[in-house]
Amino acid sequence: MQRSDVRRDDGTWVGLSLDVQDRHQPELCVFAAGPRLLISQLSRPVLLAVVEEPLQGVDFWRTDEYCSFVPPLRAEAGRAPSGSPQRWAHRFAQYLIDSPGSPLHEGRWLLSCESPLPRWRHAATSHAEYWSSMLVEGHPDGYIDWFLHSTAFEVLPLRPVPGPDDSRVKAYRKQAREGTLPPFCCGGSVVWTVI
Image: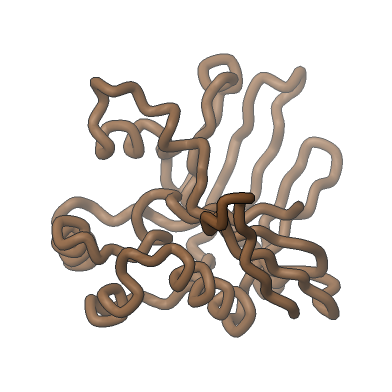
């Protein structure tokens, strides 16, 4: 795999480009057959879904088999590259490469902290309200109604979202106040896309 920094004409860092070869199939992948959808990780089903005819919505069911390819980060690890999206992108790229269950596969990828999602937040809406409104509810099963959600991006967690009293949430809240929260732990600030 080849890594290269992507910069604007003025030299501003935009992201990290990954040219991946010899990974023919990701270990976290999506399969589709007609109206059925399966997300699998390391050959274990993670999410099953059926698109309703005539494309009105999606019924889904999570299996609780998903395992994050990003390990839980201790506060010290968050402080090390704090404030540097470029350093975090390189660290995140290493997680994608090394961890079992990664979605990484052959092609060109871009890791960037420039996501359109935070820009769509209305000024009167707090960050917490905005990101909470983007989470698809229902565990282990639920329904996404495309008539209600046709104009918005949403986040469908592959595992239950911890509550506000969870110890890791408290630790992340403290790191957010300190300005040392890893970007991929704070609601989508790092986005990976296939180019």
